[in-house]
Image (cartoon, each protein chain N blue to C red):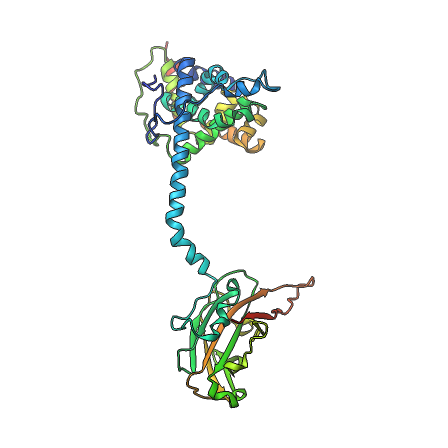
Length: 240
Length: 205
């Protein structure tokens, strides 16, 4: 290859080797190819729809369930205060557990999913005592611990302690942000919730208590770069 | 050249079915007659006028007559649905760009039917005047270029496009075209097949 003009000449000679094709042949071939492409598009579209219809029932529910309520298997639907989690906006619920019937301690090993890096995750608790414990209800608490550190405490009430005011009741976020306890997304940790009275563990037959993790906001930073403390909003719980 | 259907089908294409209507390749012309696009070529006109040129370019890209025809036909099938839109601009540039992209996508998907080999499967007979050897050498050298460099060589030196036009077709910068072109020319200058063919030509009486 001596120079560019030589290359140009030889490329043209090479290209001239292409056989002559009549206009009619080109038109016929183009028509045929267009038909083939149309058919392929139709088949592809039908196939895609069929695939979506076939796969969606399998894939979509787990995806929707990722951050939604995962009720404890033992939680009966007739439990009155299951609304504690069931009635909450489930897209905020990361997970929840109720105690086993009759048990006075709940142990739950869980993990905060790797979601938004600035999620603020907090917890909520509730504790209900049977009616017969009404007189002494204020002395009982459901106290949660993470790795031996006290997380939060919720006073126990009896059924009548939750009057359905306008069909709703208000609960506060019960704990500071979980990262204050060194809990990071993706790292498993164990929560222990137990009934206590005067800081002593007690057994109360028929007591129901639960623990839930909620995503309560997005961590923010002021212009100086200092992180503002997360503020979790008041949470209005539907009460059926 | 073509089979009964007037085309060589690639493996995996769907056979022709009776349920598909015959595409009206002159439809752009019909719509054009209603408005200001009276002078714009119909798709049919374009196919008749430009196929030979596109085929030459496709042949140097694919190094196979049948693949070249299939590349041109596939390009037509891709541009035809949008013809009424692209005819407003520069249809030839658009078609050229679609063809290059189709060729590059074939390469990526290994539909090109080419396999890397040290020796050409069909060397042909020794040329009487060294001309066939020269062509074979050039074709082999082109085949050893990466697809984008081959496309740059074809666009720049067969189609005589400027660097800017080539960059537009390949959707890259002018600097990229320059560097690809430079590398490709350097490879062609030292390609053993071309050196051999040139030596044979010089030694022939």
